[in-house]
Image (tube, rainbow, N blue to C red; front, top):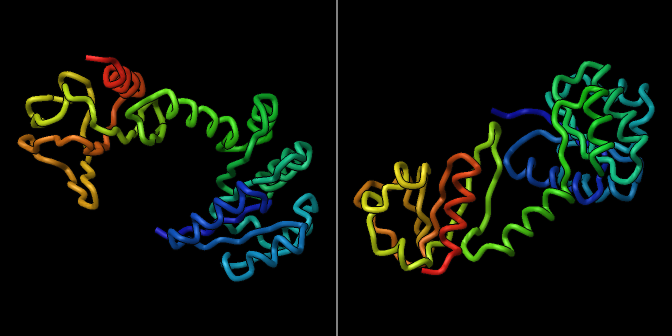
Length: 222
């Protein structure tokens, strides 16, 4: 279902969110007080506006309350980030996601009403660290309630040239296999008799602790 988003702040984070939303077919308004940045997105975003988001009258004139979701992507100015988050919530925006620079900033954003708080630099550092420390974890996404979606490269000889039934992911590892990527082929909802071949990439889902345990087993030598 198409939603309308407003992104306040066109730094690297805000720009990336904008491009991703546009590619997924969403309506996106971008707001920044830097005219040059806004001009760069005139032909990318649905609408692009030069405005100081710390001016509540400017936000009202833009009609910010009519948006389903506002992303406060302001960079280094913590005071501006907090003030804008507070204002858009007071103006009636139902869902606000705000970028935090540190844990203190995150706690304040939560207190002023942010519905979701993201730590792009911290999270990317954690993700990179985990990827570098693993020989098999290609990518992952942490979901709500302690679950993780992960892509695993099947190179461990103990787990290849066997069927999913033989490996019995659900009982043995407490994980479910959603799909198998084999080169350019994608096998969705693979059957129990599907053989796992070397270098297959499995998309698995389960509790974070079980995904971590399975990756640890893959990293251990035979």
